[in-house]
Length: 497
Image 1: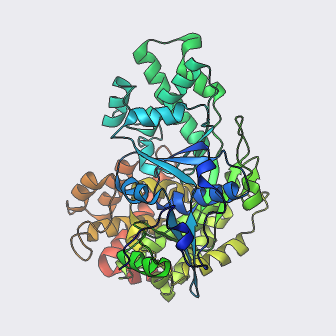
Image 2: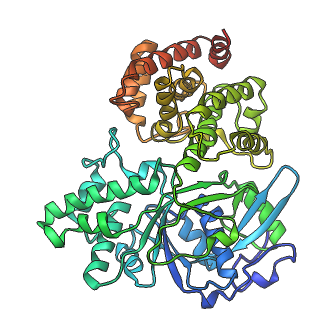
């Protein structure tokens, strides 16, 4: 075991094969506040910003904000914000130390410090990776106005808990101080993520205005709707959870301890709508694609990568496969994924220049990466929040085209069956979901497959208001019945009939 840890002091002592920041970190000026400093951000946006800093764009350092947990701050602060990015393929591993995160804040400990960072005139971009569930959407897609944290933030605007509350209060303070608004860049897997967050935050601000009695030119909602940019983006990189074995291996390779290295794959993609009134880094110099409309790229990623990932996760769990590469190596699951792609691809725009054949071939290679050990249980989390855009949206479009989304709806049925399997063939808390309490009640009610599908669709709001909703529930129920009788093998057999 090493006796020292990664830091600015030990940086120059690292082995020559380890890439380190190629710039003077003491001269970096913060220009970005990031909400949700999890492993994905540190493998993706922070790495791109690190490239920009190394190229001399020194006014784009990152202030990282954890909205809930102290864990990332407690790991990185003693390391001066440094951490190792381990880029792993089946044949090799490359280590790179990232230095773009200059400071870390924990919102529940000091919301005032977070608001100070957000209102700092040097902050021109706020990026977010807070996961789908943290956007606090109701089943119909609007803001969940009954959520306790939303209620709290409306009553206590100067002590917010949610991303909505922090963004609204910061934008109000900047407007009052005559400081131009920052650009809000959502990097989560939501459909039209920028437009979605813009709508949710405007809705939150309308409720805040009503509570505070502000109208007309003083309306924060109008300011956000008309004056704040919310470009959409598409992000893509597989980032499995770091294990203790990873930490031990990285410590040996570095010669110093790293409390929280990040594991990832060689592939990395970021597509962003180019709307940044307050300026931005020259990301395009380092592989970022700047576009007018990110929609087609976003749909391809959500429906082909994320949709397949969900299918692999739930069917893999039900088949006893702990990691993606093992599940994808199962001939039956591999055949299913190919058929899933065949159903999803026709729902993508034909005139957007998307090369779906090359994309799915690359996905197959990425899913086969044995070095990542990407756990199916990790991907299985939050299915109620992920499946609408990954699976259900494609299924609805298939019905509109008079085509049956049989493989797509097996993913929904497999999610339900995996939820039913927790505490039985799967560990009790093997994966989690924001709807776990009512889902557990449904799963324990001994309902028929038809009754279960209907109850889950109502709970999660799947295909709400869609004319083909009954057909989707019927397909889901049929698959669930087969999964209950004979597991994935029985469901696959029915697909083949």
